[in-house]
Image (tube, rainbow, N blue to C red; front, side):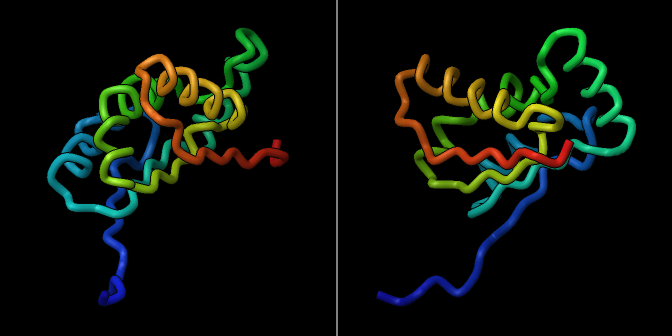
Length: 119
């Protein structure tokens, strides 16, 4: 069996506010190995810090609902690696939200990592 010669990486967003359509296009037709979704900028971090103080949710919820939920089955089936900073001020919270959505759909849980400690 011949070893794979590279990774196809697609970036679906560059800030919180970008359309989720980029992720849909890349997952469905991009033949990618890795989906990158960047959401953070200084303004976003400020908004997430305020939200975390008010609601205890300091992550970009739209990633869980508008990217992960509609695409998770295909992402899991195609074994696409997802790298995102949508966890913002609460990466463990986003991890839990993704696990809850995936479990509710009856799909196998992929490996999900959350890196914290940089508040």
